[in-house]
Length: 134
Ligand SMILES: [Zn+2]
Image 1 (tube, rainbow, N blue to C red):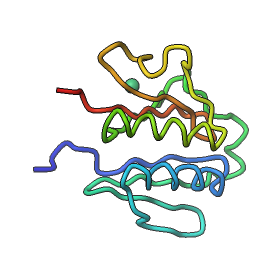
Image 2: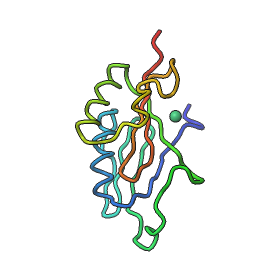
Image 3: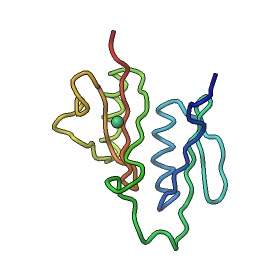
């Protein structure tokens, strides 16, 4: 039963090449595979959900995204394990992706919430969360 689960997410980006380089790496780390590609967009899919990135038209680039304005604040993904979160954090740092809330990492979301927070090239916040340890 898929009713109500996210079918897809579509994000408009300021620079398709920069965003798909970043998101392609991240989503493939999370188990997604390349799905669709055309001149102005590209998507990755995992099971029944896909995420699409589309180049914003230049006439709409004058107002940049800001996650504190009305609209999307962040996207959160399930990670595989705490070790996976740690490995991903190292890879993000190697790619010069700033880790948010570094002084509280990996417990910025609370002591029972093991996660890494960072930004995509348009500064959309991204979170990857470990499953609760039993
Ligand atoms: Zn969150």
